[in-house]
Every structure is written in C-alpha cells, then in structure tokens.
Amino acid sequence: MSAADEGGNRSLGQLVSTATSELSALVHDEIALAKAELRQDVKRVVMGSTAGIVAGVLLLFSLPVLSFALAYGFHAWTDLGLAWCFLIVGGLYWLLAIVLGLLALAKFKKVKPPQKSIASAKETAAVLGNVKPHPRTPGEVVPSGAHVVTRSTA
Image 1 (tube, helix red, strand yellow):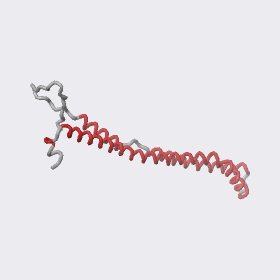
Image 2: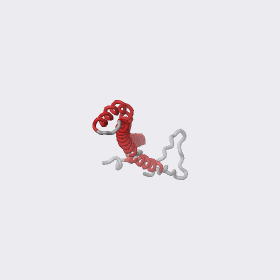
Image 3: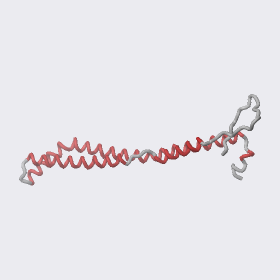
Image 4: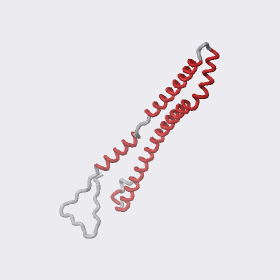
C-alpha cells in the first residue's frame, strides 16, 4: 500500500514530517543541479583564463629573448636588414598572442547561467505558489489554545 493510499490514516505529525523531508530533498537536489552546472562553467573559465595568461606571458617574457635569437637568425638567412628582421619577429609574436586571445574569448563566450537550475527553481516556486489553504466550513469552531492548520487541496 502506498503512502497516498494510507494518507487518511496518517497523523498530522507524520504528514508534516513527510512534507518537510520531501521539501528538504527537493532543495538539496536543486542545489546539486546548480553545482553540477556551475562546475562546467568554472572549467570553461579556467581554460579561457589559462589561455589568456599564456598569451600575456608569451607576449611579455618571451619577446626580448626569442626576438633577438630569431631576428639574428633571419638576418643570417636572408639579405634583409636587421631592423626588418626584428619587425618580422615582433609581428609573429603579436599574431600568436592574437590567436590565443581569440581562443580565450571563445571560451568565455560559452559561459552561460545555470539554465536548468533556474527553470527548476521557477517550476518549484510556481507549484508552491499555487497551493491554496483548505476552506473552513461555515460555523466551524476552533477550540481555544488549538493550533489552526490549513490543508492544501493537493
């Protein structure tokens, strides 16, 4: 026999306990869903940030050392002047930094709000917002000192 079938035989304390535990489980499930969605976005942010940091490090720290080596290599390999060789090397580093910056931008654009969690929370709020108290019959007397408990129609 299910809990719904024996609902008329259960005490008020048991009903409140069941409702509280089910609401608690619902809240925990929604929190778990939000955490799962946010983990994916955090991974994307970390990857995008890493690509941006690598681009910055390449642009700042490798330029002086590698520029000299590559520029002198171009100068020895071609008949271009040393200034032109340095300009070519600088352009190559800028091109690499632009590619890595675009990769970081693409990763950041994939970050979205946790849509499943928001939809689930809105659905739960709509269900809880539609709960109506059980109407009292006219002439019903509530004994003094008794707690008034309203019931939903569900």
